[in-house]
Image 1 (cartoon, rainbow, N blue to C red):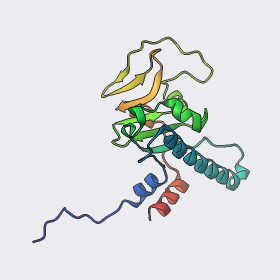
Image 2: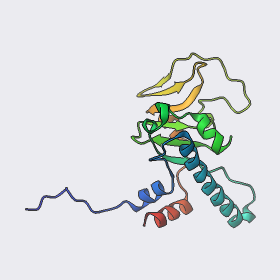
Image 3: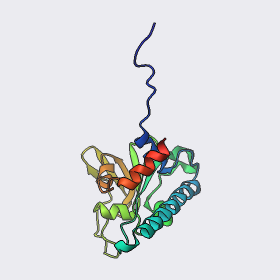
Length: 184
């Protein structure tokens, strides 16, 4: 007897390549392991940006920094089960490179300060933060976690992830080609 639908032997090479080209945090069992994985990916992005600048030398200026994307983190693996926050990423991405990393179930993500600024959730660098209530910032179907001062921590829940994710530019042709090569 043959029943269709139980075996579907196809692969989405492009999506697989984009995933494999991102920051992989599954199994990161501590803050240090989380940050080490992010730092390694930042180094890869920096090398890619340098290569692109050399190839486009005649074009002049420097393009925007590539986003740190990916995820798979699970705070249940960490001592104390504390959620990551923007500072964890800021320490390894620097002040200008945006980052958004999803939890293993994709119902939560953490963004760094650069990404939160791009989304308008933090004031521009150097600007004074306005006083805010310490209640979470709720959006339809989601929540932006805030600290006791009302400042976003970087933790985004459910639909609040989209407040930052919509600022991630789509991959360009070179990135898509590289992703296809990785995915194959």
